[in-house]
Image (tube, rainbow, N blue to C red):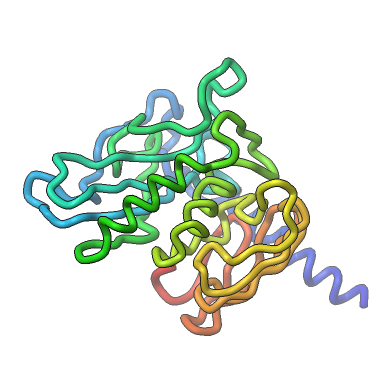
Length: 248
């Protein structure tokens, strides 16, 4: 019994310790001096008439980047001259700034020196309808002026997961190191998985279990997720994210 308990504890703690030893994705540059220019991951609207939705993730700023990623969504309707970027940020909320920010940066910009990763991309037929529903989901977000890094609500939890559940055909799959992604609005205990392909139980984002076709099996302990994806074989580890087959 004790052996199993220590093994489980190690599976949560060792990846976190390893993350302390990994190279700084910002190359040691202070976050407030780091680059925030476009990466080129989003298509040029002038040359792309079709509708596009992209979801991004990048390591969080400063010491928080040892644990979670920051996530956001960018949309461009058919024929639109540019993207609209939606995200939740904690900066300035205590001083009266809204938590939901629109177009604070370009759709694919470096996140204070860290190059983002595309979690999801949808293009073409049917995407305009999804964009309309994404905008409705942003407008109905239950915490537009509230931000709490842990266990939530924050940019990795209620916001992107709320959009995912409101627009399940997107199939958004938040990575295991989106810390706090299992926080459910209003203290809820049961909900659909963000990808829409299964279900989850969660106790204020501090403990829970998720089982879904896209996410696989995940167990959440104090906001850290440990899991396995049997369809695209991989381990999903706290702090480190997915280890296994490419993709999310």
